[in-house]
Every structure is written in C-alpha cells, then in structure tokens.
Image 1 (cartoon, chains in turn green, red):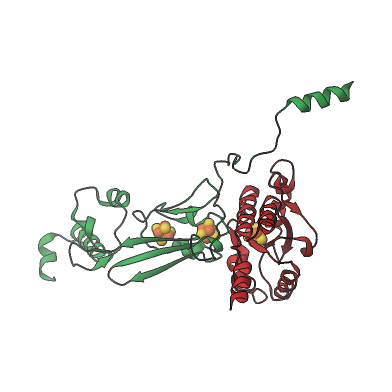
Image 2: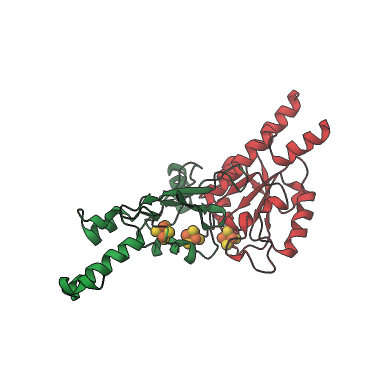
Length: 174
Length: 159
Ligand code: SF4
Ligand code: SF4
Ligand code: SF4
C-alpha cells in the first residue's frame, strides 16, 4: 500500500529535471565573469600582479591610452583581482559565462581602454584618478584635481613646506 | 545532401553520443559532468549519452591541462573517433593551461594547437548547464556540417 502511495505521489509531482535554459539561482557570492569599469581604474597593475594564471595584462599607447586586457580562457575565477583592486574597478558578475563556438580568441577576451588626460599644470599625459578618489582626497574645488602624479607630489610637498616654514623665510631659498 | 543524409544529420543532433577525455584535469571539470548526467540536469533530455569508448562517440569532451604525456593520448583518441566529429573544450585549462601554465611538464598552449576545437566552455569549472549548452552547440555544428574537422575533410575532398 505504501509503495502505491509513493508511486501515485511521484506521478502527481512535477519532475525535478531542469530545462537547459532554466538555470538555478546562483548564490550571491558566486564568482562569474569579470566586468571592468575603465572610469574607476587607475592602471595600478595590482590585479595583474595578484592574478596567478596571468589572465590580466596591460598594453599601452604612449601618451594616448592604457588598455586593460582580460582573457577568460586563462581565468580561474578566484576573485583575487576584485578583492585587491583599490578602487573596486573590477567586479565578478553573478552570471556564468556561456559557451562559445569561436576559437580561443574572440568572444573570450575583454578589453577596456583607459584614456590618458593632460595634466592641468604641466600638460603631461597621465591616468586620471577616479572621481570618488579625487573627491575624498581634495574635495570638488581644488586645483589638484587634474594634476599628474608628479605635480600632485610637488603640490603636496609645497603645502607641507608652507605648513612648517614661515612664508618670508621660504621665500629666499626658492 | 540527399534525404537520407539529411535524416542522419538530424538524428545525430537529436542524439549526440559523447565521450570524455581527461587530459590532465584537476578533476573539477569532470566532477561537473557527473551532475550533468544525473536526473537534475539530465543531459539525456537532449539525447546526450555518455559512452566509454571514443569509437562510439560523436562529440569528445576534453577537460584539463594538456601535459607532455597527454598530448599523444589526445591525438590517439581523437583519431579513433569516427567522422563526423566535434570537440568541446571544458574550462580554462585547455584554452591556456590556466594556473598550471609555465610548468615544465605542461603544454602551455591552447588545445587548438593539438586538435581542432569547435566549442569552448569557459569556467573553472564550468557549470553543468554551460557544459550542456556547449554540447548542444557542438551537436548543431555537426548537423550543419560546420565542425572544423567536417570543414577540413570537405576542403580536402574538393582540392
Ligand atoms: S582594475 Fe583595479 S587593480 Fe587593476 S589596474 Fe585598475 S585600479 Fe589597479
Ligand atoms: S578572478 Fe583570479 S584568475 Fe581571474 S582574472 Fe581575477 S585574479 Fe586572475
Ligand atoms: S579548468 Fe579549472 S576545474 Fe577545470 S580542470 Fe582546469 S583547474 Fe580544474
């Protein structure tokens, strides 16, 4: 009798099998495909440094741009790059990458171009800092916003000097 | 293509037989094939059947890092698969060597340099449904006569 009940129950229940398109929900911490936000990236190279399989590389066109390259066929989805990116430019998406027909090249590579900007003081091309970082460091108004790293260092040391050495003394050893 | 060839091509897509080849995998990708054959993800709903011998297979699933020793085995097994055939590469390892690239016993190159690969399934390891999607794509390519080995043999026949 018990067996009949089980059989009847199984006949009435919907199947447990999933359709190929019916993907189960991924957990929130699932590490899927990489996404990169060029506006937040400072091209610091930390992601390429921590990536064990060397899936991330950089190329540059001097004076114009720096490109961040990612090859999914070399990634082990460990998430170290996203964890170590100081500006959170890299995020691991919740969806699984799909299969591709193409050869190992196309469709599996991601390129993200970071345009260089001229320094507002000396004109040297540099990778601009992300807006959030600039606002945290200098606020919205300051002139340092558009400076290259060299001019930023200069401006910072000038400020430091001005804080320690009175203005008239600082004047003659310039 | 005459009617009978057409029917055979459609039947092959409706029931592709696969065989699995571990070329030096960490076993992650192979473990993901097991749930694919279970009732949950049920590869047989697409007619996919796993076979132990390459001589019965239409599609070869190759997983894992290519090593100096597995290179010969891959070529040997690939040669035993009857035409027409398709190759599906699972995971990052066959595409590049993944974290093992650069090791002295590992061929740090793409599987494409050993056998012609038709479908790449990214992931480390890929999800069962991504593997199923890869198999379905390969089966479609087989039906269309568009796998690399089919194109190659057609080119050979023409010239
Ligand atoms: S993505 Fe992040 S870690 Fe990588 S270079 Fe850009 S800022 Fe640095
Ligand atoms: S997830 Fe890991 S393997 Fe993939 S690019 Fe980032 S650091 Fe490299
Ligand atoms: S791709 Fe990842 S899971 Fe698959 S064999 Fe390579 S290391 Fe293992």
